[in-house]
View 1 (spheres, rainbow, N blue to C red):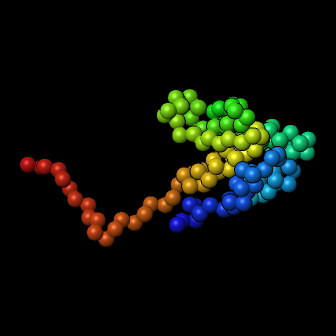
View 2: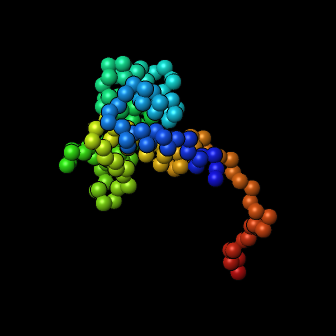
View 3: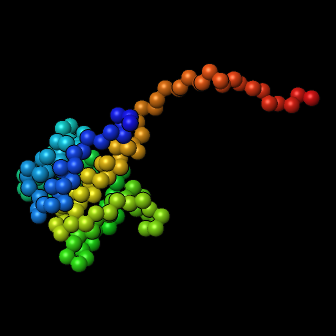
Length: 153
């Protein structure tokens, strides 16, 4: 398995989110330290997430974290049904539901449903995320030989 496909998000975070009954400052700091690459940068969005955590605005902090770490993902649907919050994240919100490959999670707590979707999007993004710098051209195999197929007659 390549280094890109190896996922560093521990299963304990997903278990904590699934079994938790609410967001805490410690849980959110664990998620940030284990999964976020852009958060340590001192920019406006990271400072906003930090302020929202200080204010214990968990839902806004979860949405701001998605905006900071996964700018290509957007909340497609966030609904409350039968006592649970259902959150769907998508890369292409304009596509119909049946064509879109979205991530859907659910939890009794809205912030935990959003954070669960965030973790799943990080897992999917770690495997399919292209490199920001194009790779070098690979050498052709030894059996490859160029062949001219033109008909000059």
